[in-house]
Length: 190
Ligand code: G4P
Ligand code: NA
Ligand code: NA
Image (tube, rainbow, N blue to C red):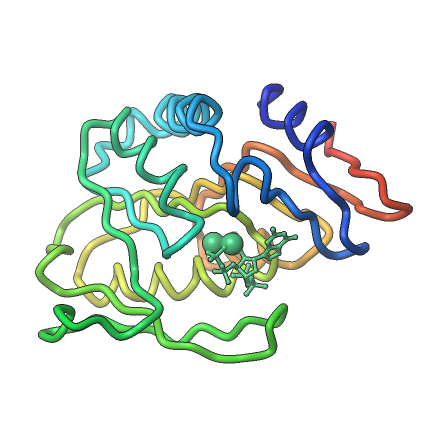
């Protein structure tokens, strides 16, 4: 997706060979028009899949996932990472290990918001090792629903996430695929 790559080239900051900072438009400040274009692009790629619901993980997945859900005309459900006063009953959960942060956390969605038989599109902002998406996929399956695809805004193709997801049989669609951050330079696939 050309607009996204342009934005990354203009406003992305390479923090290390492993980490790209995109706080100017995705992870802190959010560019609504870009999110709308991202939502349209995911909707275009998955429109024929009979999607009932978009699922993401708070916080940074919500903006692109919401715009995707709007374009598809379906609800968005975001998994929570933290305990909530009101999120009490019937939780579907998964343990997610973050290699980046070197810690394990529990993510949860109430069973009230995922029903058996539903067709779910998972959307997330970054794909690194794929652990967040695998955890969301496990939650969707616990509900008896199915994952029809995974939409990723920025894929770090030099990390093992895509392979891990494809090994589980998931269709992965990434809008920007980064092959390297070496030398402070962002290099894209194709
Ligand atoms: P994984 O799910 O693919 O295994 O990723 P990992 O655990 O390594 O990611 C942990 C957090 O770091 C996630 O955000 C993820 O989006 C983010 N992340 C991973 N690589 C990058 C990167 O190169 N740049 C940026 N900006 N973020 C990266 P999170 O902890 O869930 O936080 P939030 O942003 O949703 O609040
Ligand atoms: Na993030
Ligand atoms: Na995320």
